[in-house]
Each structure stands twice: as C-alpha cells, then as structure tokens.
Image 1 (tube, one colour):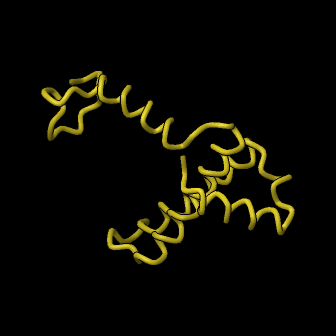
Image 2: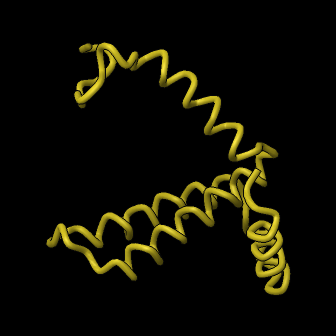
Image 3: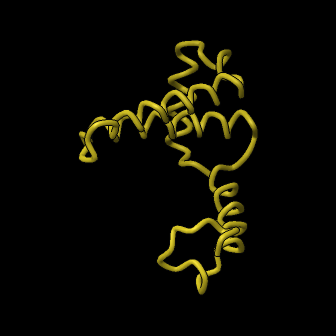
Length: 106
C-alpha cells in the first residue's frame, strides 16, 4: 500500500479544504489525464525538460492515482504487482530482452 504518511497527508490536505466530495472516480480519472498531459507538455519542445517542473507534474499524476486507488478501495502496490505478473507472461525475457516490440509481435 502507498506510504501511510503520504495517504494521511493527502487525506488531511483534502479534508481541510472539504475537497473529498469532489474526488469521484470520474473526476479523479479526468484529473490524472489532465496532469499527465501537463507532464508530457514538459517535453513538448525539448527532450531536456526542467527537472523541477517534471517532478512537480509527476507528483500531481501520482497524487491523483493514489486518491483514485483509495476511492476504489484497491491497494496501489498490489495492483501494480498483479499487473506486473500479467505483463511478465506477455513479455518473456527470452523473446523481449532489448526489444520494444509489442507482445503480439514477438
């Protein structure tokens, strides 16, 4: 599960502002997409993006992802591990090492 400290701080921050009422799955998914776009924008014209800006935007994406996981009642660590297990099956080391080819083309 995400760090208790991080989740506690997120809950406190949102609670102090009475923002949890706006944290519906739909709104959180929209926010993830918006923030991911802002993260991408960091690299729009320059592959050497400002590290501080990239870090700030990445933090925004992660924040909304953690809030969505909490709202859905899922453990972020567990769902990543579960997905990683599925991905390992799709991309066996012997066929995918050093290649960016999609699994159905290996």
